[in-house]
Length: 217
Image 1 (cartoon, rainbow, N blue to C red):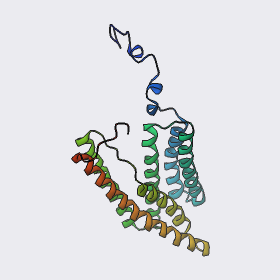
Image 2 (image 1 turned 60 degrees about the horizontal axis):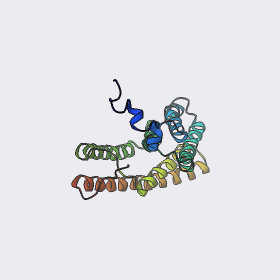
Image 3 (image 1 turned 90 degrees about the vertical axis):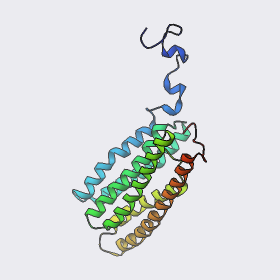
Image 4 (image 1 turned 180 degrees about the vertical axis):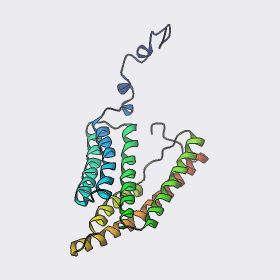
């Protein structure tokens, strides 16, 4: 018999006929928070086009604000409706990182931020990605618990870049935006690297067995 065995008939019978999403709620895909995260991901190339194409900075900033609002909203909805999922936990930071990468490239190409800042943040991503790769090979999975420093760093950078974009213009308000934007950028970069150090410490503890992996990540 295809898809089952002689004693139970099929896979659904073995699990009591319950859908996969009911057997494992964290394995769900079609949820409102996941839809919001996908919408955020689709907005990344639109943002980059707005910055580098027509240079419609007001629309680009509005898109960043909408993305940040949806980021906050999908977390609220996930908790309120009990729709947390492993896919959502992967999509959410992926969207944040892609927006940061797109903004870095857009601002650097336009000369608003220096390329060394892009290299500094990119180097951090490469190091963390390498640590996750080692973790996957040695432990069997490639996820780490998100730290408060990492969340704060991401928030600082997501505040910094639209302010720096608005600060590229002339005028008092633009100058104020530029100063505040650089303050967020400096703090965000420092915290981003501090979070990377915490991730490396966590990865080392998992590899050496001093930290036990969460059985339900």
